[in-house]
Amino acid sequence: MASSDKVSLAALISVILRRKINRTIDVVWLVTNEIYAKEIIHLCHAQGLTELSEYADHLNKAIFGVEVPVAPNLANNNATQPAQEVTEQNALLRDSDSYFDEIEEDVDVSLNKVSSNKYVGGLR
Amino acid sequence: MRTLRANSYVVMLFVILCTISSAAFSATDDIPNESISQTPTSEQPATDAATDQSTEPLKTAEAPVILPASVPPPAAALAPTKPFLTGFDTISSGDTAWMLTATALVLLMTIPGLVLFYAGMVRRKNVLSTALQSFAICCLVTVIWIVIGYSIAFTPGDTPYLGSFDRVMLSGLSYIKASSQLTVSHLAPTIPESVFVMFQMTFAIITPALIVGAFAERMRFSAMLLFITLWSILVYAPVAHWVWEPTGFFASNGVLDFAGGTVVHINAGAAGLVCAYMLGPRTGYGKVPFMPYNLVYTLTGAALLWVGWFGFNAGSAVSADGRAGMAMLVTQAAAAMAALTWVGIEYYMKSRITMLGFASGAVAGLVAITPASGFVNVGGALTIGLAAGAFCYLGATSLKRLLGADDALDVFGIHGIGGLVGAVLTGVLADATISGLDANVWMQTLAAFGTLIYSGIMTLIILVIVNIFIGLRVDAEQEHDGLDLTQHAERVM
Picture 1 (cartoon, helix red, strand yellow):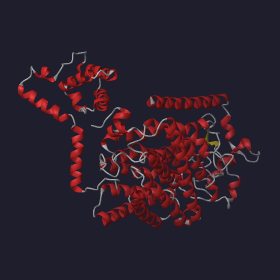
Picture 2: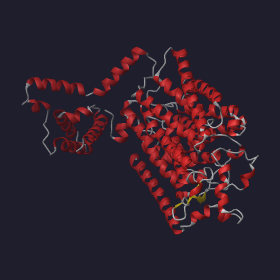
Picture 3: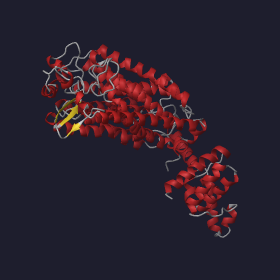
Picture 4: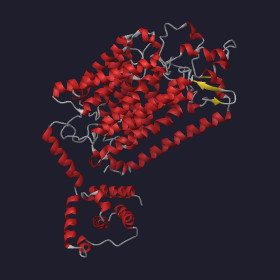
């Protein structure tokens, strides 16, 4: 499956999760990091929503090629990995949840330093 | 549920278009010689020989410039008043080559010019949807123009308000290699009608695409498609008929609009303002900063618009001649002057010169010179540029705040105001030595505001209808997530 298709699936999952359980996920990280993907797919199945589960199944197949069992939690997956790698990945996972939002906030903060009124109520 | 209903309306619309097109095709197939009846020869006395019809119009219908009805030229009695069949030998290869180029340039203004211009100014979460809207309009209006738009805009009708249905599905448009004949428009007798149809189609595409800027970041995609379909048929085509078809209401009263200041810019500006009112402001408008995604896109888009505008204005001469050259020169002069004026005011007011200011000023100048480009000299162009830079700056800032509408990308402030400035100043600054015509500033003003009112009222009616059947605006949650994800399941990385 093409990368763009994976992103589309991830985007659909992102929207549903945000609406249904107010959970924000990182779309880019979801299609690039397998551990994160397994966790999110597991999360999707745990909600008991048919549509969400279907999307999760599609994403599972798209990323892993075949139907693979999803680990119940991240800790189990990380058990076989070196401690250093696990620490780094967990840090990334924590950071990735609101990756885009944080970027926007950073930009907004920078903007406010330049001009607090810029782009409020109009572009020009 | 609502999405399902919206989708069903889009499907219904598509089915209706297909039905009309198939009916028209079958009608054309049944009567293969129908196109021949479009020639004046078949409808006029025998003294009007076909050869006369093919040569006389060259003197009288050089450009889509409207001759005042009160003083018809001597040859007007013999000039064709509708598209007609003529020989290959009457076609000018120079004019045709230029018009093919101009058509491509005008299309370049929408895709990718306007796509980039608008996409760069919206927030990241709405970039794709905004870009896609212009692209989708290009496809949609192309079909509408072929099915019905061209016919009701550029053929004479029973009334001065609407053209006929003779060219529905372009029936009658012919290219007959065996007899070395083809049809030409009475407005452009030196180029094939197919080229004229294409050239005017690009105008029909860019006009509704301009409106996208007013309802950016909050309109349902399906509602947008239905709105643009109805607007193109009920607003754009009739106004084009009034202004550009010689028997049209404004044209027959001597209104001058060389390349579309009234038809394109005032029309789109008024529609944009009504859209902004009807959809309401974006969530957080006036309270939080709406960060533009990438202003380099906007400047690139503005540059493409500028280059494409040479096809828009110089192409409206419908010939490769000195008047087209003058149109190109004054277009460049007005755009540059307006850009400098805009940033000059910006520097005076805010002590900064911005990239967006330069881009906006240039577009404002291009808009304002559009109706005047075939009528004014260089001095007039600089004056129009100066006025456009000043008035459009006020339109996009002070007037915008005064009106209170969230016209997201300043469609009314730049296109509406710029179009009004250009239309009125055409009446003041038209140089009779260039066009041979004297303008009437009162008629210019009347036509400009008449179009503004008609476009505004019709847009309001169409939006009410679309709102009843589909719903205009996405819900708050979708708006928060962005139209890219919620409408198209895609996202800019």
